[in-house]
Image (cartoon, rainbow, N blue to C red):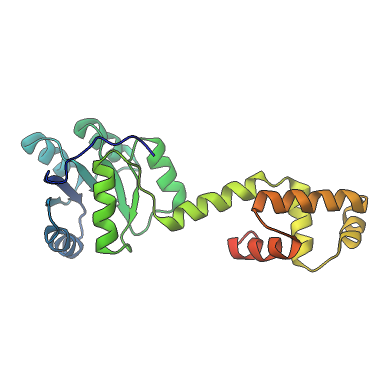
Length: 212
């Protein structure tokens, strides 16, 4: 998270939606327009967004659809970031975490899925306007899961897989051709990295996270 730019509660935030789906734009404008202190406009392409910025100045938040005309991968994002001086977030129903991660590294202020509620969208817009980085809870969880899985060493992943199959330490040792004490150490390390209390909890957590 970054430091706040300190928008006052009474300040009207200028929001630009860049989406070529007319129905989606109309619904979002109506929903956000009903909220206090939000001035929302919409255009259907990156080129049109650039024209809007040139003609009316910087917007506090730009919600940029990943599939809008002119995106060309993430080049459209770079163009709007440069012209608007930041404040651009991906707003998509199709982009995954890997796309969102690339966008954030390129300077995007977050990823807002189109499945989020209007209330959550309004909250995210205000966070971004204050200089914060917004990611939906499910992506934060996915990121944490990926990080935890990456921290597991190859043998620990194999041990965890055998734990999920219900094998005991001695049986796992026989499968891996290592001493049972090594397996015990691996199990302890796995529990620590997954933040679990014991081997049973580790299995439950591995299945919940989709590791196995």
